[in-house]
Image 1 (cartoon, helix red, strand yellow):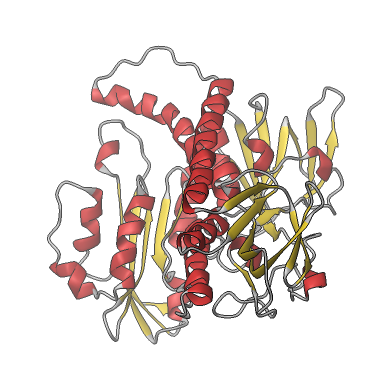
Image 2 (spheres, helix red, strand yellow):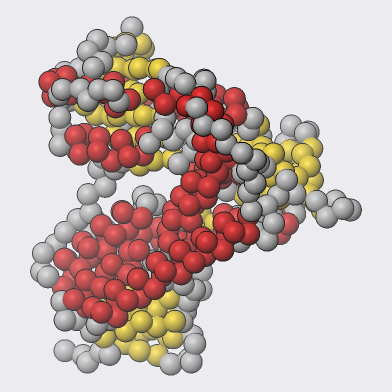
Length: 462
């Protein structure tokens, strides 16, 4: 057997790479992990975690307004962007330290450098220029925001990366995109007092989500004052004489703003990684192609997370990493289970969802029962806020199995995680109906919708 410097070399210090490195090192394997920016990856450094902190910050405007209905007199409030940024940075630094500590405590060697493949077993460490060898190599470099290089003036725009580090809060922003990132940041900036316009090329925001959730959120956002323009794209961005920006849209509109943010998808971060030298196959977007066990076409090279462009969610990357360690080092071939993944959009109101949308389910099952409730949650009864909560359950009529649950409203993400257990377990609508309601709660609607709102057969509701 050839002698290698390491049993496992991990390229990329995000959630997936760190989990694989820590677990393998805990098994007594010689592990090194290299990260060129900061440990924690997209989620911790420039994604889920700072975004959720920004979401919390942006919700206080409504909290202050709602307090009056419950007898509270809230004095004049002011918001300081610099304080939020500083506190966010301090928390991210703390979390990065925990990632490093976990690796070090497990016995992994932590390297602060870009790493590139030389061949199937050799890695070059760019900082210092030395090379090392490894028996197994894991690619976990994640993805990056699409810069939209074809857009004239794209260099004047920001992405979600820069949004976390703006020196000043803009007075007006235009955001292009209709997915998680675009919708969440539209709500964040609006909640912080920024005049916000969302531009989306499709007919409705948040494609692949249930249409009732998409429409419900769209209406709620517009009611708050967020301008949403569908069937449009930005054709050009230019700098005004006063330093602001001007965005020209496909339908002829011209929007003035301090910032233009592009949130039009993410690309696998494989450019210049040396995959060709190692013989690793990629698809047309540069994503690493893997089999059911996360192995590439090169037997000793694996890949997990966003770089494979499968399901771009942190828990999925972590799960994939655990499967790689099971397969490569424990003799227990393990395939990631990506079926029935609970997810949330931390908009305002939130969307929490698990399983199939109504449209997806109608293509899989002969007949559906759909249960839907729309109501003012109790927290809004005294505040006077008109925002409604929507709950929806999609059921396979033949087996009565619940195949999808969707919630729009306060704490929808928390509900989706719990509902994920029920849907994953294959519970039926009868199981839901037999469950005693917890009163008073919004969630009790999920177990008290006894009569279908409609049925679906042959693509038609009746």
